[in-house]
Image (cartoon, rainbow, N blue to C red):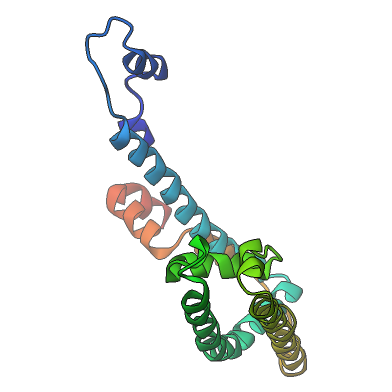
Length: 209
């Protein structure tokens, strides 16, 4: 995509069109070009995520990483369960904060803004306008949310992962996987790639067989 779309014109040409020293072309919008550049970086990020996931399947050859992979899978079910429990509590906190401070503070004027302000609050960034409006309610709200997320919720997730890792260490007694050259080649070249190669160069594939 980069080769097809962005090879022409050059960057100097874009700067020249934007400058328009002769005042011939007038205003020129680069909105579409900016969107294409941004989309390319997003696609690069998505491809990198899938690539790293693919590499993790290879790193599982290490027995330690294999146990951690199994522990994450074991803990994921409990993570989802406790997340579903705490989501209503956080959502209720956002709704109540919007009702209390929405008329007076811009950061709480909508549910979306309140969500951002709540996220900042978990990092210790308390909006001083909350204390100016109502000191008691502001302090109680900040302490309740901070204790809920930082101490209780974080410790619950740590406990879940430690317990899952302990269970995996006790139950997973199989030795580390042994990969030969054929298995590594099958991992590096999925069946789809091999089929495409055989379809494009059938004579070479038959000669190798």
